[in-house]
Image (cartoon, rainbow, N blue to C red; front, side):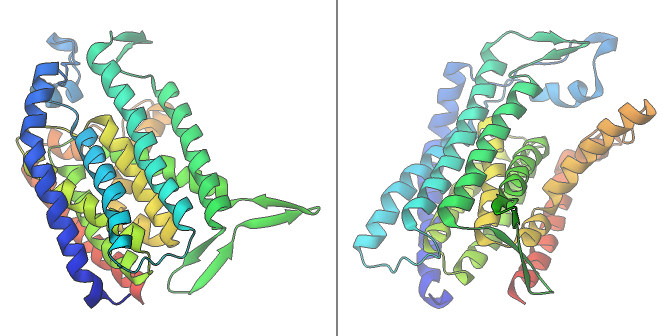
Length: 359
C-alpha cells in the first residue's frame, strides 16, 4: 500500500467527514441549547470563590456535547464506508484479524464515550454533593477511575489476546521487548497491565488538557495528521480510514471550539478521544512515539500529579494552579496565546515523533 495510492482516499475521507460534521454541528448546538445541555456555574461566588472557578465560570452556559457528535459521525461513517470500500475493491490490509481490530476500535471509542456522557449528564442535571470541603459535580473521581480501570483492562486484554500483541518496540535501538514472562510454566502477560495503564493515562490526560478553548482538539488534530502517516506506513487500512474520518470531523468541530468556543467536547469526547489515542499507539506498536507526539497531554497530566503530590508532601502548591495551562492563564497570558503556543509545541513534537517512527 504505497502512500501515492492511498493519499487520494485519505484526503477524500477527511473532506467528506469534515463536510458531514460541518453540516450537522450548528443544528446540534441549537439542539443542545434546547435540552439545556450546557456548562453549569460551579463556583460558590464571593471571597471563597476558587481561582479555577474565576477563570472558568465565564464559560458557563456554553453547550457541552461536541464529543457525542464527533463520536456518532465517525462511528456511523466508519461502519458504512469501510464495508463499502471493501466492495469497491479497495485493498484492505492489516496485520491483525479485521473483525477483532474493528471490535477494539469501536468498543474503545464508544465505551469511553458512554462513560464520559454519563458524567456529563450527572454534572448538568444532577445535584452537587459534598466531598469533604469540595463540592462534587458529576461522577466522583473514585467512581470514574474505577470504571476507567475496568474498561482499560478489558481493552488491554482484547489487544493482547485477540490481536496477539505482547511486546513493545523501542525506536533508535530497533529492539522489541517481549512482555510475557514464564513463571513455573505459567505465562504472565505483563503487557495487559501496561496497556491498561497507558489507556487510562491518556484518557485522563486528554480530559485534563480539555480546559481551554481549542487546546485539546487542536492538539488532537496534530496527533491525527501524524498518525495517518504512521498508519499508512504500517499497512493498516482500517486504522488509516478511521483516523482520516476522525480527523475530518475534529477539524469541523474545532472551527466552533476555538476561542470563544460555541461548543465544548464534554467528558464524552475527552475520555473517549484520550483512550482512543492510546489504543491507536498500542496497535501501531510504538509506545515511545505515542508519548512524544502526545507529549503536551503527558505534560498536562504530570503537572496535575506534581501539584497533588506537592499538596500532600509539602502542604502547598508547586504551581500557581494546575494543570499547567491554568498557571499560564493565572499569570496573565491570554487564552488564545496559550493555545496557539501549545499547538506550535505540538507540531514540533509531532515532527520529532514522526522522525523517530520512520528512521
